[in-house]
Image 1 (tube, rainbow, N blue to C red):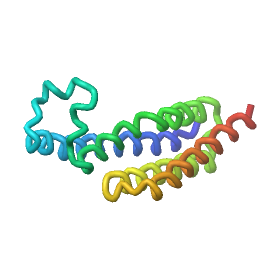
Image 2: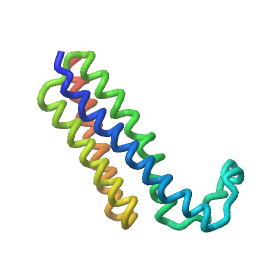
Image 3: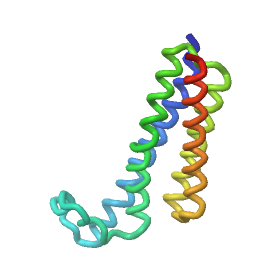
Length: 137
């Protein structure tokens, strides 16, 4: 069983934690500057007053817990089903690379016209990973 496909999953987990640190590095000072009591953060929308950069990092952290859940499931399925060949590993790395670029765009310029094609490309990689596993059945 080739475990090489697990490394991209670990890389994306590591990247998610980098974004987690960035989120708090931006959010805590922004909350202090806006005089927001941390206890008020439990109410939906209470942090909407934060600057875009602080909100973009938090949004990206959330995004890294949405679509990538499919990626993680596919990685583990691919490994357990014995389909973790070189193409599968390359697709997994492609997905990670696209998501990292997506994060960089969202946490810097937050340009939606750049983010959307990246999101679409990452979705197509997931489709390719899924189809390859279906064809191997």
